Length: 298
Ligand code: SAH
Ligand code: SF4
Picture 1 (tube, protein in one colour):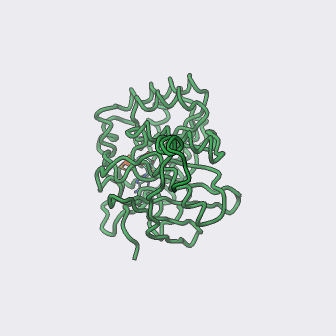
Picture 2 (picture 1 turned 90 degrees about the horizontal axis):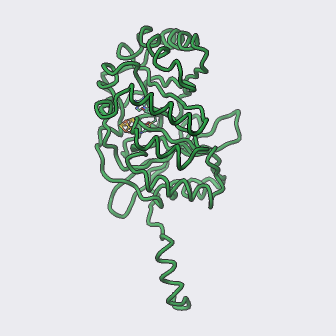
């Protein structure tokens, strides 16, 4: 544009980004979940998932924060990719804009539960949350960030976004079990993590969501549930059980039987905490938790 002053041009350069994100593919699951594959100019790709629930009017976007992920949890398709790179704030915002443009419906809730470890890309995550708050009118209370347990990020998040919701991918009750599943356990051990969560609660007064992927014969023993009750005894939290979603056809893991999930849940409920089992969304298009690999769907 030639009809823009030099001053305005340099201001725009400073404060704005022209989106370079490409819409590569879209898959729609039987339950209405939509998975988008987006591409960036350097060739990296990420997936974003839009979830609708029959009994709720909200549209929830599941946003990715990194291309790939360096944490390498052994049950997760994203972890198999390793870290490709951090996403920019604009690339996180673009994921939501793309959904709104495609569906013509306003996204009301955001869960940072796509690809990547949000707290290893903290500043860009924070930048995106601020844009969601200020420009897309999505309040912090409508935003959830899920982390594998990066303690410095958790403490900073408590200070910066005390109104948002924090979800923790715990997946085990002991150091021994957790270090086999979530390698970052070696850096931030489970006892330190729970202490950090107590500090988080003291600062924010916000109940934490504990996520627990249930994998048959790995972490679904009822003793593990009893130990989890002890570990979380003095923590204000809800527990969300996620039955394992297969990430490839020869996966060595499987989900526990319905009965085992019920019993595991029953024991956790003895603690008085609210325990839910996460609904599977979009597993027929590999859009369910842990299935995001950035591949094209046939
Ligand atoms: N990277 C962040 C957020 C994204 S994953 C994190 O790990 O917290 C959202 C949830 O799905 C996490 O709790 C994650 O551990 C879980 N998940 C990963 N792979 C899974 C799989 N194969 N089946 C079920 N849940 C899985
Ligand atoms: Fe990364 Fe989360 Fe997958 Fe673990 S579960 S590898 S932290 S995306």
